[in-house]
Image (spheres, rainbow, N blue to C red):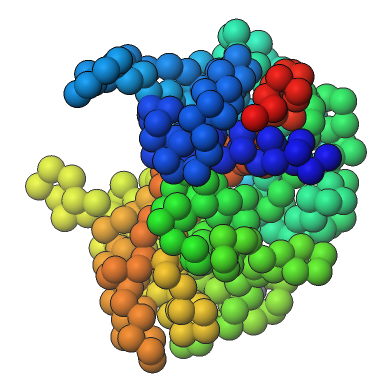
Length: 404
Ligand SMILES: [Zn+2]
């Protein structure tokens, strides 16, 4: 068993080296992993046969034979990511290197009943895969959403924005989307995506902070995402705020961060101010951002600018607390807040004016790597991670052939 464990570990090391620095020649892989050249040759052959690695065009050799680098296979297996948001469910097909092959959006049209959302996701996923999967192998389905989510029990424990309590989501989807089906909280899942494919590759610790329709944080220490008992870590939505209009929050009754700094709070305020009509349902945050931006000879809507700037300042106060408490090497920001990136300067200024230990927001705050793909890459990550941790589990190759 020990030898088998080593082979699995070695295959994982090869695949991860190629992900981190590829395409790489076999000699480079051997240098990076410390494996022997014959082992690397065998393992790359097995991983190529499994469709995980592919050869690239040969490089000119300075001496001897030309070197043939291998990279993560572009046409390799993919995972289906399903993100359930407040306004819509987003489906995405995500490749092994974390790139989004295709995305599709299903509008909720205001009906947030869990059964209805599950029905819509299952039917939508079937149609989406029929149209987009092609000849690729599907690794399975990853589902993520905000709030308090316990993937181990397949349960959305609490999602106040959706109005869900103790929803057994994996039961509702059982047998209706391609398995295996894995569930995680979307902010923690997005932090794992950054660890594998994004800004988290360069540092061992960071805090991922999401300001969108939901708010949440994921704390990464020693490259591990903290979950805590019941997977309840990461709640920042009810951090108290003071000296502001807005709120009180529907669930905690106080002026809290979600009541002043969520996308939903911005949209509500924009409707009150007449920046958005009461009936404007489609992409409301994007419309606020567009209204704020100068267009042609206009200077942009000052009220919309003020809303976005105020939200950025509130977010900055919360990030300053996180920075003082944890001194993270990075804070990775995501959600609607990065759609209005011209206000990140305000956010950084707010952080720098409030931290007490010299944490520098200009250097350490970075936006999420995945842009508009964040939600589906995060959803798919448990499946992709499974391949990198144990590529032979699904290679279908007899383990004995890989003995080194
Ligand atoms: Zn609250």
